[in-house]
Length: 402
Image (cartoon, rainbow, N blue to C red; front, side, top):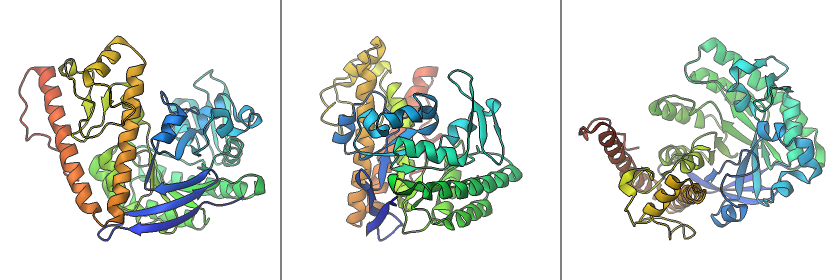
């Protein structure tokens, strides 16, 4: 067994932003990095070759879904998830805990683990911290996450405290199982800080997990329905609790404003299904804000998806054409939008890395977000006026400038 080696190569002078190099079994990863989510062993609508061409060296898989179908034993027999899926880059797999805990009416939690019913066929299963390590080792995950208790926004303190207790106990058991895998498994285990929205519980969770001396640490329980200002407050508080010599990962964020704020706080890794999910529904990122390509105003628009940035593999397609594909139910539409959104985020974090190295990150962040958020507001006004037929006051609902 080897651990992920992480080295900080550059730091921003006016914030905690940093550029790092994370050595993993399937090659190095330069951070900050956005990781596309490939739930069932695939990032929907994108060839693995395209992901590599876009510059991604680390993608996600979902333990819960792969455990249920096709099963980790089958994947192990077929050479592990890399060989099975044809991806030769790195793979991070989550524990499946978030999916299990979203099945509230169909699961029971004890100190031993979680018992739940499959969303596929209703069969009963039980995940323990040890089994989750075993599953991810069978998959050949380059980074695996332990079983934890993730709660939504607004739970009471007693429930949040109990979740921290279980998360720590389960992480300790997972660390023991991970260290027992021996030399045959090279992947790293990260810890997940919980504590919901109680500062002292977050601090306690981090302190207890740091005692396990794991190769990296993640912040869980953020972006779970809380207001944006609460997200920023607790991200800032939590980031300070993580060790500076290990990679720091915020789970479940994928919008430019959240990503840039996380980078500013010294976060190295982030993932989210939202950029690809919203692409499949026709919404894309542009430098001038998000736009919904299904809107009728794009029916005769010959411009590329984003006049300032469109990846060469999709730059030949106009907004009008992509809208036509969506309205006609052609699968190429979601594929084009997905490649665009992923390339947009890859380019964003690449520019952020360059700005950190050049000591200009603060100016870069302000410049980017001013245009992006103002564009989002313009799109909100257009959509509201189209829906209601009434003019909207441009000063109402203006977002913060980040």
